[in-house]
Length: 190
Length: 123
Image (cartoon, rainbow over all chains, first blue to last red; front, side):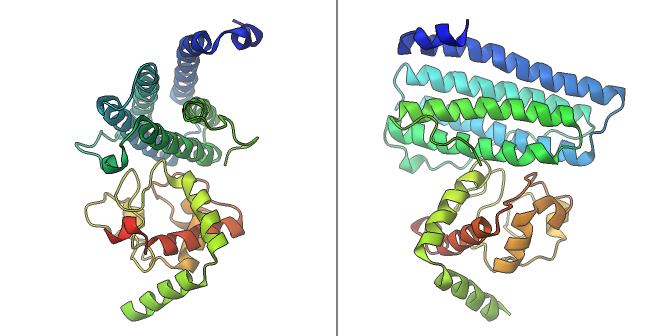
């Protein structure tokens, strides 16, 4: 599907198409990471520091999965927003799975999900509250990956992290759009 | 020593202009994949940061590097750390390139100092 075809769809169909396409994009993310891992197996430029960065990202991804679970179970999200949240949670699960495998491949010990996370559930009273909370996390994730990309010794890992960054940025934009805010507020992210 | 740190924290807070704090709050949005003011997440909480010894929040699993850093967080030590965390504390789990802009760092530090008096941190 070309961009022009996508742009001509009604919002409802465009959202469906977006969801379908995002699965393919995440597959590409996984492939990129796995490609990095193959490069590592052949003789790597990756370092212990790279594994540490990935493990921190894994911790944040696991927390994001838990946060979306809180949102999904809150009873505050109505379809189709609920479907969107579950889809985004699925992306974070895919990120976490690949990150964990890569950390292990690098000789590190992947962090595990916490038994319990602290979330500001007392402030989540409406669907918009949940969306705003998720948007805050996604925006932070964009910044976190942006801050991690330049640090990788292995450029394949930097590329893979940038691929995840792109996915998080799309989540953030869609959540902002669902809140009635400008989906892409600036030309640059920081 | 504690009194001096408290005074330093108060001075940092008192010196912060509202505009700096507002700018700092916007910069803080970059931290919110991992941090919150009032509770530990992937990173430790920030309430009470100024004057606190690095690696000392009870129950938070710090890197050995951070625990051994002997840093006490002040405007100056935060400025140095936030400019390039992995260079300031090699081995830190904060895999983040840092806040390169000195004015943004100053605003962020002003926000963190100011936030300590916020409702979230008083709870």
